[in-house]
Length: 319
Image 1 (cartoon, rainbow, N blue to C red):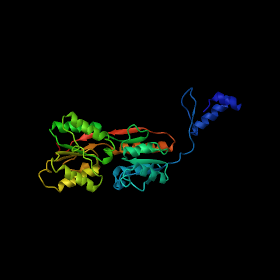
Image 2: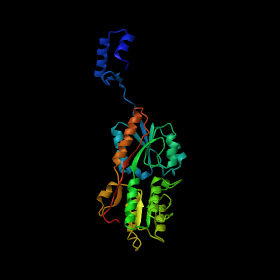
Image 3: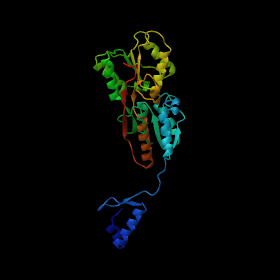
Image 4: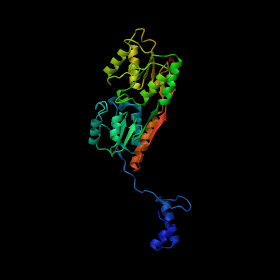
């Protein structure tokens, strides 16, 4: 807001009259003082339009996910309208063009996309529609996002396993973390194995078809010749599927297998013996996403990528 003297000159009004008017506008919260000698700031008097948010899920089951539920609840509480995309990334086979076409077909002001492949995020980062990466390979892209920083915990885990003389260590990740190139998590996993002088091959990081049948086939191949002694799984749903598989196999190769989930789920707190896992607070990610939506509604450009800390929690009967 122009200062008192300038307004008095432009309007031809006494300075004290202008000052009283400015004070009145402060009391009505139309202006805000920024201190002695500084110009007052004009405060918007109209409420920003609440953006319509399209949420694109990774797979159909994620609509029941605890943090997706909490995200939608908090956005609704903040006055925002959310819609689930008609198809998930798994439905569209992680095809960037098909995902982009689906998003364009839906009336929405901004997009939150869950665990998207790099190619999808690259395409959406070039769109005029604001997009928030809820997990996924977002690093170095001009878009906002959030998720857990698992790399320090992963390095600690591999060091711990090697100190326990574990040598047949396998990590199972979703295929979009492997293709077309390795993401940060599988890259660091292999890097740490090499650092501890363990041989590295496709055995340690199997490439598998992203389906229940493909997952079982992957496990069967792992146990055919040289059974792993430790399996890390970077997804809590896959972790439960792994435990189910091992529980129904009774051969000697299956008994000494230690399972570590590099993801987190609240049900882990109920398991006895406790499960080795990476713990992080999903609410930190939800809060960041809600903050981003609020900024979009206020017309503020927000491309910050903020990761929350993850730590390795050792289980009761783990190595």
